[in-house]
Image (cartoon, rainbow, N blue to C red; front, top):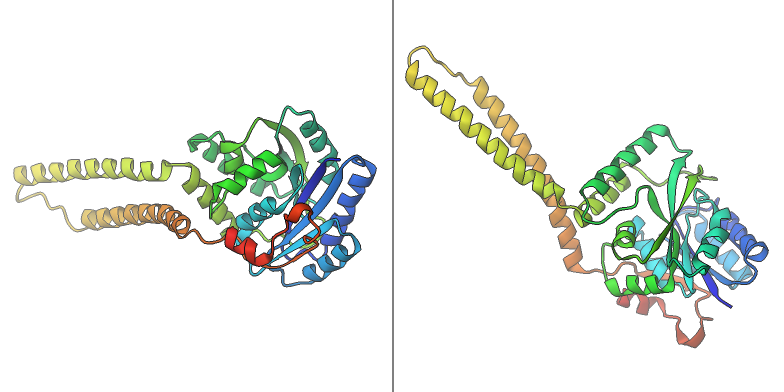
Length: 329
């Protein structure tokens, strides 16, 4: 009997954790009865009642497991780490807020079971979120796809099914700053793309803001593109060439019209401010790349666990204590 793992990252989702757990259980009982399953919640240090509710549902069903992070380790590290803790023949990554339609789980499993694909990617082709936000996301994905060295998947949020072989690839990467969407595009096996329409959150507030979206954009660009550094180089050469031409013109005019040609301070000030702005912008871009390198060189653990529930019943001694997991990952 094959096992399907369902990983559900959560943070302050007290209004959704019980509902999503019951919904996934129902899917397996009614539509996937031939499969064993485990539901793994990884909580990113919630400050509401999420952990209390998780303890409650884990007590009611031993197939539901929970990992509690010692602190909030970010929107990328926690799901990536959670994928490596699953034990199923395949793992489905699913949002806790019901924006990812759980009714598509049987279709994903059936596509995987056909044996042709080891990764099933769910691609968002429409969304009930605000149109301006969806438009900006589309521009971001197109820009990333255009300049990336890897054929990136547009509007892919991580929602999908991953075969155990790919999970093993993730375990071997040892990347302290994992960008799962890029890793899937770079190292994934044959991929099946299934389009879907993203729903609105069932309850609660989104935890995405300008800072988290900016972090996601910068991580993807510094990990999979060289365009920032290349633009800095090309514009640097261009500005240097233009500055040399302007300086030469001024020099010639001053020699020819020595008494009548007065340059004044305005062009000098404009040039200084312009060059200063260009320098600061590209110092910032270079800084983002250096920050990414610095964090990877430090090689800190993805996650440090505070507690895990229902993992002690895993077969063949596969369960790891929280301390061992923190050291390993």
